[in-house]
Length: 254
Ligand code: NAP
Image 1 (cartoon, protein in one colour):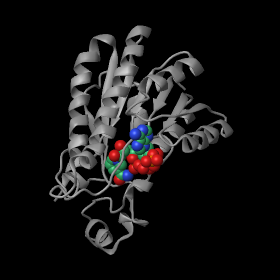
Image 2 (tube, protein in one colour; image 1 turned 30 degrees about the vertical axis):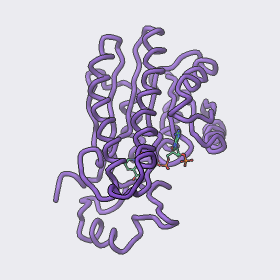
Image 3 (cartoon, rainbow, N blue to C red; image 1 turned 90 degrees about the vertical axis):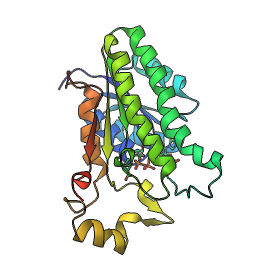
């Protein structure tokens, strides 16, 4: 096992963030489980502690509590080495009829949330003077079009550009910045009106039976978490500014 690092993971009360918290904890790292839902963050931190890991929870909105998350890491573990910008929301939004404020919510949470958190974490990392890693959770939606998703896809596209720009600007400080772009993942985000979009006949026929996803299934959150953890640990010391697509082959065929 490598050196134990301290990771702040946003939106870690559920789905991919939760799986990433477990993956990094299993690798010996200490975790600040942050989520807008404080109760969910507590549950995940307790799961990690029960398994013998080290974790603290914080109820935190990425739009307002960036400094509080970094302060929590330093208060609990003395340092921050890793930030995973994972928090996200999705709701269908028809471009012609959705009011602007409603449309903008997705950009506020996923793009500006990542900006706030990256700035707070990078400032602390620079002050510490020993580098660090930032991992942004993007999506294949960042580089593909889709109906009812202009808010979400735009936010994700901006995240990929943030990854590139921060990689350049923070490189002199030894901070690596990379991203992970999942395809379909079996998490609560995939549930619309109580039904997983992956269980519909349309999804099964198009993406699974016709192998529009070459691996013919959505990912489990843990399959995304291992790639995030790989980047978060910083063991790939010459890798920065790139976003790794983890989509079962979805975006390499048509
Ligand atoms: P999820 O299970 O819904 O988890 C997202 C977590 O983020 C939830 O706990 C959510 O809390 C929290 N959150 C929402 N707004 C927040 C805020 N302002 N501040 C802090 N936390 C907030 O979804 P997921 O699928 O794991 O998504 C994780 C990331 O993966 C997202 O960035 C998403 O866009 C990306 N992604 C997901 C998929 C997929 O198919 N699932 C595919 C590609 C990319 P609430 O539940 O209370 O809102």
